[in-house]
Image (cartoon, rainbow, N blue to C red; front, side, top):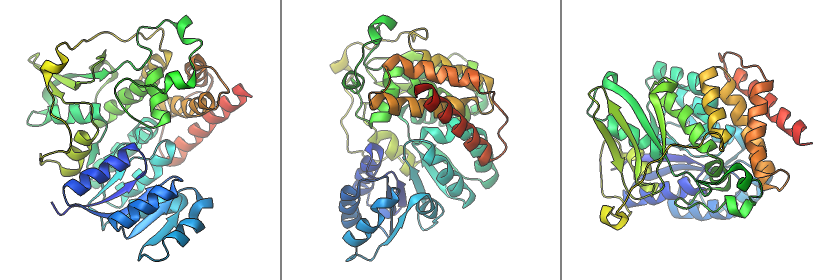
Length: 381
């Protein structure tokens, strides 16, 4: 295909699979960035020969530089390094798959440089959706969704007129605790919550899937990606993760995208769009599944979902506040400092306690994010 890509978050789940897709289609890799895993980043650099690499954790910079001293590669670090790669137009497309709010500034940097973005960083649109989409429209930049659900919606919209869309149906696996009561969730351990039935993901996203915050964040993302109102988005629990999402048109026709639960399919679609090429994954056999089920989500038990929907309905910085509060709460849960149900409670309290404001600049987003994080840290302390 001859495309050239840069990847932020190359050592994570999406990043490593993006490299598999790149290899399968002879794509060049211009730049790679990782958080702190220098061992894997070094291996990737030796295999894919990027011109630039970045380690976000600045204390690892010198060691990475030494390890790669024999290679003709520029070694960068920190947020400056991420933004240097994001703005580098030697690549045709930037894959942003870092986890957390760290992803927002590189996305905005790529857009202002006129770079197309394959977006797998939820927080970019959750916290700064209005900023990101306005800038992308102004610059004529494409944002290609990498999430399996948003990719499914994007695929179902192909060949149809956007204004004929009625609503979207966002599917959720329900996570490992589907059907449990609040009382049963009181004693959930970190190991329980990290045991996802269908998908293999990083710890933060796996916990978000268990609390259903992940689906709440995807709800907010969908609103921005597809220019919807909250009442045009329906969430349906679909345990088998075969129907990745669907759209309903004005004539009541519903078009869905199906496939095995493998992120390589949406990653490849984002990178090769509008082409469809053979993908290194399994074929879907519907008869192997036999039955596909669909149920309503339990918003009273999984309060994170309810809080996220309330946040995007409120607008302004409210989604950013919920997101920032959730990031700190999830980290505290993973560290054994709070219980599972406290994640949702803290996100709810942060939104109730910090008044949302309008978003006009990147600084507005960061201020709200900082307030939310401090609120949760103080609540835990």
